[in-house]
Amino acid sequence: MKLLVSPINLEEARSAMNGGADIIDVKNPKEGSLGANFPWVIKSVSDAVNSNTPISATIGDFNYKPGTASLAALGAAVSGADFIKVGLFDIQTKEQALEMAQRVVKSVKNYDSSKKVVISGYADYKRINSIPVSELPPICKEAGADVVMMDTGVKDGRSTFEFMTNEELSDFTAAAREHGLLSAIAGSINFDDIDALNQIDPDIIGIRGCVCGGDRNSVIQQKLVEDLKAMLV
Image (tube, rainbow, N blue to C red; front, side, top):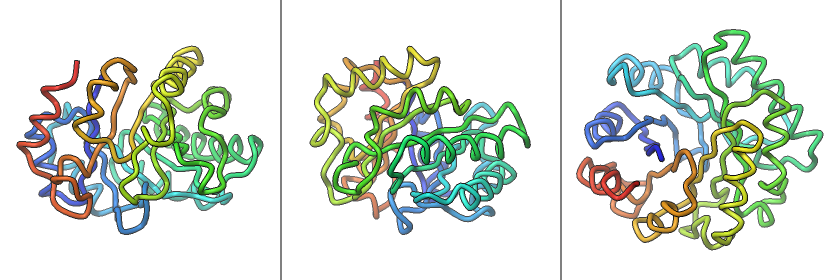
C-alpha cells in the first residue's frame, strides 16, 4: 500500500518526501477537495523532488465540462505530473462520467502515454449529487484510465469511513483490481483508520489533514508522515 501525501507548495513537498511519502500529490485545498494548484508550483515540485518519487497533480472537482477538464489535465501533464487526477464532482450519469474520463485520458496519453490518469469519485456522493463511486471501476476501465479513487467532496471533517462501510470499501478495491486498475482511498483519513485500511488493502491511500496535525489548512509535518508511513503494511 503506497502513501500519497498532498502538499500545497515546495516546502511541504520536501517534508512529505523526507517523511517517506511514495507519491507527492500537488493540490490546492482552497479550490476544493481536489483543488488545482498552479503549473509553476507543479513544475517546481517536479524539478526538486527525488526522481524516484512520482508527482501527482489534482486538476479540480469538475462538473460536466470535458473540454475544460482535458485542457487542465494536459496542463498538469506538461508541468511535470506523473499522475493526473480529476474529480467527477457533479456528474449525473454514467455517460457523462465516461466522456469526462475518456477526454482526460486522451488529452494526457496523447501527450505522454507513460503518464497515469486518476479518476476520482466521492464517498459522500449523495450529498454532492454525484454518481455513485461504485459505478466508476468499469467506466475507468473503458476510458483507459489507470487508477480509480474515492475521496470526500465536502471537507467538513467527516471521513470516507462515515459514508462507506469497510465492506463497501473492500468491494471498491476488489472491483478496481477486477478491471485491471489501481485503487486509491482518501477523504479525511486519520491515524485511527489505518488498521482498517491495512485490512481493506487499497493500492494507494491519500492523506493531507492527518499529517498536518489534523487541520488540512495547516502545514505538513515530516514526523507525522514518518509515523503514518510506519503504520502501513
